[in-house]
Length: 286
Ligand SMILES: Nc1ncnc2c1ncn2[C@@H]1O[C@H](COP(=O)(O)OP(=O)(O)OP(=O)(O)O)[C@@H](O)[C@H]1O
Image (cartoon, rainbow, N blue to C red; front, side, top):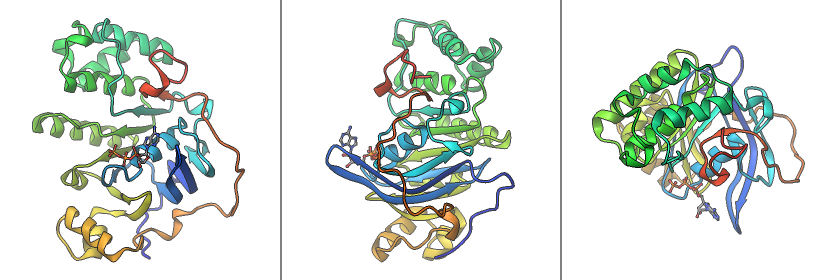
């Protein structure tokens, strides 16, 4: 085991301890523990079905969990107090097709209670100015995704949980989005970003590599490469799989002393999210 976690002065933004989650009959996460330091971009990488979305849903508080604890900004995941502080971008863009981009953002701004000036700010940050008055239903998939992202940026959330935000985007837009993520982190936000694309890993400050619901690595990119003796994240990932041991995790990834937790299911009531499972316009949505 290695310990490369940076000491964040005000503690980690996200702390997950001994998380167990089943979906239908499948045990998806079995005793997962990790900590996400504040103000960094942390990449969540792993093959399809490894549990990335399930972990993200748990962190934003929309996933029923069997046991374990999750704290976000020092509060239990899904707490009403986190509603405006944590944003969730889901894989499926969740926008109203019969509203324009600006009308969508106006609606979400009102739900959130964010300032009116936020609309122009997020349109500009996501480069949607040229389509701001078009119906969302007439936009490309990538543009609709950016409307969801713009909605996630309303109110300047402190934690952004972004599930594959660059899927379907051309290389130029991908680079621009990563620049935006770095600007947000420089402003103090914490970003947890999932991806299948290993070359995006290099753009992250730290990596969480998952496989079959287990954490194979929790380290900086340089740390992962050095530990595996490779210069490529994809090769590093394959080597970690070959070794078969989840052995590259910081010692302080399990920050709680409690060894047990209430077995009762935990479901969040309030979270700012564009999760389609929550349904457009529902309380849980934003
Ligand atoms: N709604 C659901 N009901 C039952 N099982 C589910 C459901 N959603 C996901 N699962 C299962 O949970 C496991 C983890 O899925 P999850 O979506 O978290 O993985 P992922 O790493 O995000 O995958 P992807 O990269 O393809 O999005 C998979 O075995 C999947 O089949």
